[in-house]
Every structure is written in C-alpha cells, then in structure tokens.
Length: 314
Image (cartoon, rainbow, N blue to C red; front, side, top):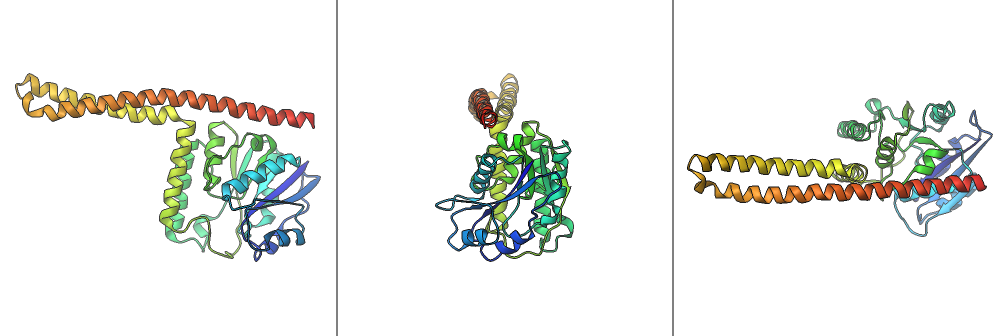
C-alpha cells in the first residue's frame, strides 16, 4: 500500500520547510509514504526548498493556474505514481500532520472513500466571529446540496482512496474544496469527517482578498456545481415558478374580465404572456440541460474506465 501526501504550493519557500519537517514517513497501514509538491508557478525558491527538505516528487506549472488546477495536477500525478491513498494538505502548515493516520483510518477500514478533516471552528482563535459564522453556513449549504454530513466543507486537509481519486473531476478554477464534496455526494461516494488539529497561522489566506469576495465565489461555485449535477431540478424549478406566476396572473385577469373590469387589467394579461413564454422556454432548457448532464456522466464514466484499464495494464 502506498500513501502519497500532496501539497499544492505557490511561493511557500518561507513556511514549506516547517510543513515538510512535520510530515510523517511512516503511517500505519502503508508500506510506503511519499511526498508530492505541486508548484503552481512560484516565483520564489519553493521548488528548491521542496527538494532540499525531502520531497520525493515535484511537479511544476509554467504559470500560476490556481489552487483547483494545482490540486487536480497533484491527483493525476499521484495516480500515475501508483498511490493507493492520497492525502492533500496545505503548504502553509495550517493542519497538524500528526493527524494524517487518523485521517486515513476510515479509508483503510473500508468505511469511507473520502475523509475530510474538520477543524475546530468554534475554538479557532484566528477565525473572526464573521468567518466562523460563514464557515458554518457554507458547510451547512454544502451538506444540503451534496446530501452528505461533512462538518467542514472548506477544509483542504482530506484523504481519498484510489477509486475516488480516479472519479474526481474539478471544473472550477477557484477552489476544489466545495466542488469535490458536492460531486462525490451526487455520485453516492462514502464521505466522512474526522476532527483534526490546526497550527498557529503563519500568514493570512491568499485564496480570497476579502469576506465579500469569498462569499461571492463560494455561492457561484455552489450554484454552478448544482447546475452541472442537477440541471433539471434547477431549471425545472425556475420554469415551474414562472409558469405558476403566469397562471396566477391569468386567473386574476380572468376574474376581473368576468366581473366586467377586464379593460383595466390589460397589463396583467401582458405580464402573464411573458411569464408563460419564459417559463415554457425554461422548462425546455431543463430537458436539454438534463440531456447534456447525462452525456457528461457517460463521458466521466468512460474516463474512469480508461483509468481503471490503465491500472490493469500496469
């Protein structure tokens, strides 16, 4: 059994030594533990530092492509290197590496395909009250959309087995944390959470510039992934709402018309026509989008089978 610990990095030369020195070389249940650094176009000495402090593998982007792309590059490289289990952690040493055995335990026991480390949000002294509230709210929304029980949806400290990694597809360039949970939930993968500890903050987060930007990007990510995986529900609900509103206005106009006051409510008739037309078109979009979603699922399944075939050939 091989475990690969991957770390996406962007200009982490100052904190990466501390992160690497904390990583384990022996984890119960594994014959081999290797470290993989994904350099997302760093302009400092991140690559040199990674090699100096014992990284087994380093993959570099020729320019900065974003955290989600770096994460995906790491997943594909880990699969290529023969990983049976992959652990992802951050380059800023936010998470305590000593919790990696606890993180992979449900996978080794066959209880979970993906395990997400849940940070102690309530007692995290570096999180403001606003951030704590938003973290809880965001995780609650993701739980509803994904039909999972993940406690800390934005945690980057997570483990997955080989099959879950082979099925993983990340479309977002902003972040992978929310998307992969929603995606796995809709694929009926087994996801669980374990409590993990955190270290002192070495630097402020560089993923978002402000709280409003974080909220905006998170909402866009959640809506986009829901549209990708549940397009009929999304567009169908909008279409039915528009159709219902149009029918209500039509009934209102009919009432006034039958009582002899229809001439004063022509605007209701016009609005009814607009709503019914848009609602009908949206319902058609729901059917078309559902066909596209079915096609995407087939393509993803083909890609997964190709990866499985490559495993068997190797």
